[in-house]
Image: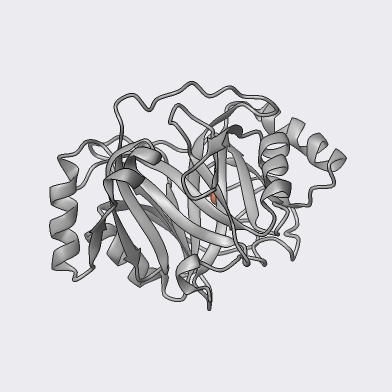
Length: 299
Ligand SMILES: [Fe+2]
């Protein structure tokens, strides 16, 4: 059974790298780390070398998601599950690993989300302190994917990747945690006609981070598209906003946590007007609408 350390990285394609650097650094509050081997800009929001990479591209969207394994022993279990499911995996070349401060990594094309996933173990000396500025970001929280058939995606992530279901809201969305992470979800799958990115979440340390963001976003004319509100499933206080390309980002404060041993059963929550937000804020139609194109589908 594959064991994960965390959802560690997300890589996004953006159409104007200079504009997006300013935004992700000054407005979102990520710490700029440097430029990677392919010209991508790297940012940090926890104690890892980097958590977010931005790549210049013609179309905005998801490039890659990185899942950190607990240790190198996890590769064997993962690779045998992938082989059994006939999902090809590829070793990431050594030079690329060292440029990305990882010890070793494999990549797959995940067929349900059409996303490229990287499973990695970080290099021993890759830890660096995060220096918060405008928001006390704790970690990259989760990535939500739009998929045509959430149940197939859930089956793959449960049976092959060893993620665990936390909750579903009807047929619309299922939340999963990367075992044995205690957080309610590290990924989720929402029903949509198109495989694409739904949103990327950053967990913050204080409720003040949400309130301060509202003022900061207003001053910077950043569209707030949902919230502030509280999710019924995870109990998180949330705020959704758009990046310069229209990709949806989220800050959240607080989240239900699970024990590794004897966690509660996953719930089937009934869809309803207040199931996404018990505070009943109004969803802006721009939320989740410019979901971008997964790089594997672009071109
Ligand atoms: Fe979220």
